[in-house]
Image 1 (tube, rainbow, N blue to C red):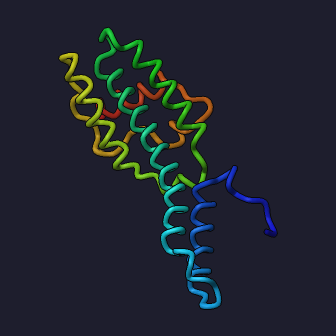
Image 2 (cartoon, rainbow, N blue to C red):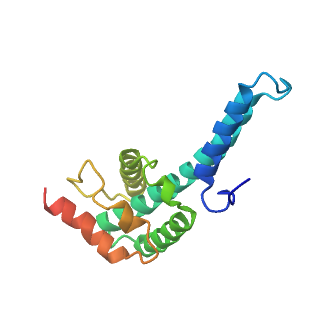
Length: 164
């Protein structure tokens, strides 16, 4: 290997590169057919995909809790939601790799967060802020940072409803 492994720095890119290398090996007739190259490559790729899905899940939870807090700031669970926002965001930021930026499905993340927040609020008899935009008003850069500002982000969400 002529360069350091990406495994520790960017597992998503590492998995894609390793899967491509395995697929290329699988086309060589001089190698043993004892290895199921296609499925081994698929399994390696799934490592990267699962890391990506984990970050998406954490972002969904972060946004869902932000939406609940913005929608029902006086609810008894509001302080707990704030703690959860911080925990999910920090965990997402720590697991995030820059190569994920273009791979994260932001429309799905936002839609899932809205659905989760709505379901969570309904349990307490609260409702989601009316008039939320179809696209996430919070930028990925605002969510995936080491200096995340919950109050600023709540303000962005509130402003996105006020503009409508």
